Length: 293
Image 1 (cartoon, rainbow, N blue to C red):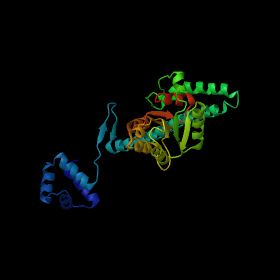
Image 2: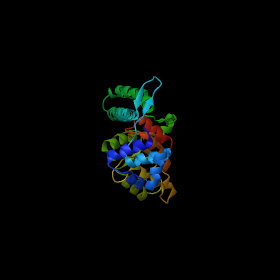
Image 3: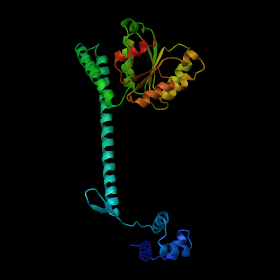
Image 4: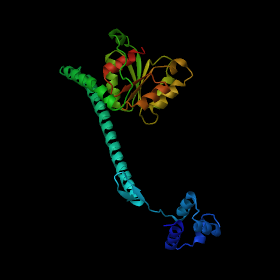
């Protein structure tokens, strides 16, 4: 079919004159008539003409196997396949997020179980054996969980000698966490090793406590990340900006249930000294403190 016949047929179906078409294309009607009559329209002009008319001219697509398919059919099949792929990708994304959440929840539950066992070890002799089993399970699973979550940063500090941990006795720790049970677990661990503990239930309170005491009063701060009123990131930033350098440089150790790479990097950027996954077990916590004693 010639270009003129194609355009004439489409204009007739749409009830548009070729003069109207020319005006919509920004051409003189006589110019359009002449180009159609001489079959001298460029591809760009022909495409613009079709765009103005809002139609697609079908043509046959040839495939290596000898089959043919119209452009319209090919377009519809492509849209159908695209919709299917988008659905599959969304399902895969949701599945991946579900598994990641499950892994984070598992790690949190294991750490919580270790924390509870540590609280009960002084009151129930059998709890010691149970505690060691939990620690072994957690140690065996931690690297696998971190790898599955894409956490490339090593979560374990260098080994500390026992006497270095013993030197923590008498040091004062500010435990900042909006969860009372988490504070209780950490307080019990710290007190059992001779440390002095004070508590704050949000970041704003922690900043005020640091400002209210003499420089050097707190030797460490255990800072939860997600808290109401003021989160751990903002609280640490404000502490680091205090005019007194001793107050501003107190070691701050992040505590969070979400150990993703982005959170670690943000904690490092604002000046947090270490990053612990909570509820943290006693060995990991004391080793971290011993690094900054």
